[in-house]
Amino acid sequence: MIELQAIGKSYQDKVVLKDINLKIQTGEFICLVGPSGSGKTTLLKMLNRLVEPSRGKILLDNRPLEDQSVQQLRLNTGYVLQEVALFPHMTVFENIALMLELKKIPRGQWRALVKDWLLKVDLNPELLERYPSELSGGQQQRVGIVRALITKPKVILMDEPFSALDPLNRRQLQALIKRLQVKYQLTIVFVTHDMAEAKLLADRLALIYEGRLLQFGPVAELLAQPKNSLVTQFLQGGKAID
Ligand SMILES: Nc1ncnc2c1ncn2[C@@H]1O[C@H](COP(=O)(O)OP(=O)(O)O)[C@@H](O)[C@H]1O
Ligand SMILES: [Mg+2]
Image (cartoon, rainbow, N blue to C red; front, side):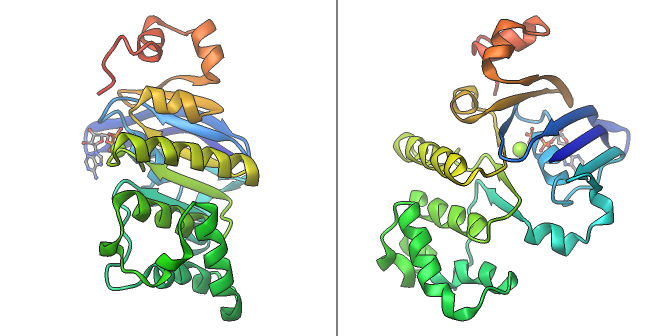
C-alpha cells in the first residue's frame, strides 16, 4: 500500500503540488490524470524518490519512504517512460537481463525467463538479439514493459508511456498492460493527460489540476458524485485537458 499524506512541492516560490492525500491499495491500477503542467510527473517521481517532497510524507507498506534505501526502493519499482530509454548499444536480451542481474536472479534462468516474457507481450523471441534501433516504436515500448515487469516489482510507475505511439499500437498496449495488471495483480500508477485512456485503464482515477487533487475515485463514482463542475468537465472531455 502507498499512502501520500499532505504532500506538497515547491520550487523556489512556485508551488507545484499542494496538500495531496492519496491511498493506493496493492493490486490497484491508478491513473493520475490532468492537463500538462498540473504536477503529475512530479508526483509520480516522488514514489521512487527521483523528487523529494517539500512537505508531507509518503508511506510504502506503512514505512516512510525516506527510511528506505533509494537503491532498494528503485529495485522494487518498475519505471516506464514515454521515451523508452533502452540502451542503444545493447541487444533486447542484454537490456532486459540487466534488470535480472540487479535483482541477482541466477544467470542460468535468464534466457528462458526473457523469452517467456517476450511472448507475454506478444513479441517474437527471435527479437532477442536485435538492437533497439532495429525495432519499431511499439516493439521498443513492449521491451520497456518487459524490463519494468520481469523482476516483479512491488509498484510500477508509468509516465505517459503510450503517448508517442500510433493509435493502433496505443490501443494494443493499453489492452496488454491492463491484461498483465489483472493477471499478476500488479500495482500500477499511470500518468496520462488522455481522459479516454484513464477511463479505460484505471480502477481509480486521481484528477490533478494546478497541483491539487480535484477528486480520487472510480470513474463511475466521479461521474455520479463530482465534487465540482471542473470534475464533470474533465470527465466528459468538455474542457480540453491538454
Ligand atoms: N525541477 C523543476 N524546477 C522547477 N520547476 C519544475 C521542476 N519540475 C517541474 N517543474 C514545474 O512544475 C510544474 C508541474 O510539472 P510536471 O509535474 O512535469 O507536470 P505534468 O507532468 O503534469 O505535465 C510545471 O509548471 C513545471 O514547470
Ligand atoms: Mg509529465
